[in-house]
Amino acid sequence: MTARRRTTLIAASCLVASLAGSVLLLRHIDQVRPKASIEDVLYIDSPKLVKRASLGFNGLMACIYWTRTVQYFGHRHFDREHTYNELAPLLEITTALDPHLLPAYQFGASFLAPKPPNGAGEPERAIRLMEYGIQNNPDNWQLYYDLGFVYYTELKDYRKASETFDRGSKVPGAHPFMRVMAAQTAQHAGDLQTARMLWTATFETSRETNVKQNALEHLRAIRVDEDVTNLESAVTRFGERMGRLPASMNELAYAEHLPGIPLDPDGNPYKLTAEGRPLLERPDDFPFVTKGLPTGYKPSALPKFHTKL
Amino acid sequence: MTARILHIAHNTFREAVRDRVLYNLIAFALLLSGAAILVGQISIDIERLVVVNLGLTAVSLFGVVIAIFIGIGLVSKEIDKRTLYTVLSRPVRRWEFIVGKFFGLAGTLVVNTFFMAIGVFGALLYVAHKFSRPDASILVALYFIILEFLIICSLSLLFSSFSTPLESAIFAFALFVIGSFADDLRGFAASSHGFTHGVATVAAYLVPNFSALNVISAVAHQQSLSGPLILQNTLYALFYSLMALSGAVLIFERRNLK
Image (cartoon, rainbow over all chains, first blue to last red):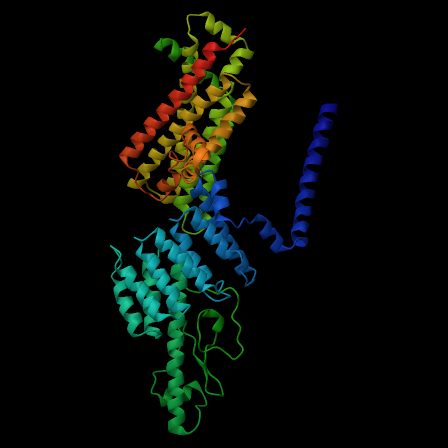
């Protein structure tokens, strides 16, 4: 073997060995290092500073920060960590860098507003974000819709929701349902019919598959909530008539002249507890239901979306 | 006169395209445009935005790097290799040499931008599957980027006419960074008083205003750009380049090359 060939072999072996060593070591370091510190180190909390540092390439920086926001929310959601301390500042930086980046407002509000585990539980900050978005994009009626949605679903402030839908309906080119929703939320606030209308509008107007799927899951949940409410009324009627609770769902269905045992949207029969409470057979398949859940039921951190679009 | 300038420009172009660093930088810019597709996939609803933003930013930044690093060596290399003396011993005026070098470098950058733009449009086509009418404004953004390159070229030549390549690179890059903050500088000038106001106002108008030429964000949002803006930016870039080039000629004419 020539000296040159020997050097090549030794150098190549060293290269491969040190590469493997560094990768293995890095994996160990990641396990030892606290996760929060990794995220904190990467984070600059001043929108002005980031804007200056971008040398005028604000659009690109906004895209990078928006991607970071999505990744941050996704990772914390996946890791079942229900604190999202950096979510709002990340969104503020993103929108300060590019005030016209509409997905940051629309999705950002849906990350911020819902209660954990589905979101950060910060509806007030979501509203501030949306108002900033409207201020910078006054001609976009969808931002009014999203803001009204936050008022309606998260804060249950139906008057504000109605006002916001009404403001949005006056934007040139606004979808006609904005006017209908303004009236509906004012007159029938809080009922399932209005909620169904809002989610149906979300499903029909969104281009994003994830949003459509989320809307569909909410519509399924509304149907379950409606079914369970009806079944609860049926149980009450049965009790008033018979002086006792129904022994089974079969008995209740027979007494109420139903065509069969009531089924959930997936076709599984509702169950009836000994205390006369209607329950879902598989509550994990309906991440957003508020009724029909067993006592002490804890939803999984990651909603299982069964509906495929 | 024109023939001599064209000849120098042609030779400068030929020399520049032989440089391997140039191809590496173009390859990097194309790689970034391709990477934009991947970035769009790990984000939500910004596929087109990220392709346009990242693609045009890559074209702009890599172009500036090419303009500075080729521009700073145009004069000094000729002096080091002593080829300048051969050129100037012929019936070529010093100013013709500078102007020829400028056009050669500008031509190189236009060709580079063309190839990098193909990468951007390719990535855009991959993401959007078709081109729409507002995509035409990307061409305007690319045109503004070329105007930016013209200014950088002339500044690189200006600095290289009196300083070493390293100093020229530092000066040109520093001026690029300051020029990116030109709007802020003007804002500061407007809010200050007295002597500071005077100095800041002069500085704000003296440094090149690159922020006016940066329309990447607007184009990414499919906003249309007005005709007067295109015309005025064109005139501004031409005036500024002419100013810097005149400075370079003035210095080079008086430089002792012995």
